[in-house]
Image 1 (cartoon, rainbow, N blue to C red):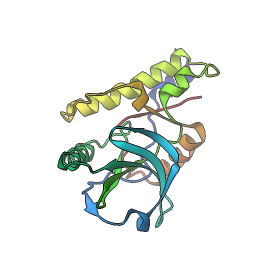
Image 2 (cartoon, rainbow, N blue to C red):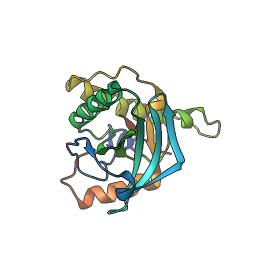
Image 3 (cartoon, helix red, strand yellow):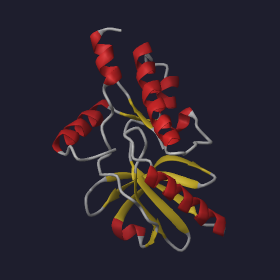
Length: 194
């Protein structure tokens, strides 16, 4: 491996743009604290939908996972997810920022990863996936999974679609923020070297 590849391979991703926090589900008015952007959908499934949002007080861009409360079990599952995410303080794991319950839904506000999904990059015919890229991705994924296992957390639905990428410009901004606040610490993302 040449010098550049070894530097990129050993270079950790930047931390989340906020310190790790212990989040508790609280009742509140989502729209009074956050500007939701439901037009910028990041994903969805049987649980609900994920879109981008902005915290009004700070301007921080986040991902908002909106979960419909259809049964009491839905709230139990969200409380379990919050409990697990509170334990996962690691650079390669998405960090939870806040959790708000309304009469009909629960919204989890999480770290937003700008670069999109790893799967989309891999299947893009215009993207040249190199061996070094693959080594970096796999290393970061394994580091995150290893930390989860050390914390006795098992991801039962691990798939490439869950892995996000941090774009080059955002990665550089994050590294600058990291230098400014060394006391900061950072469900799974890897850094795109492209």
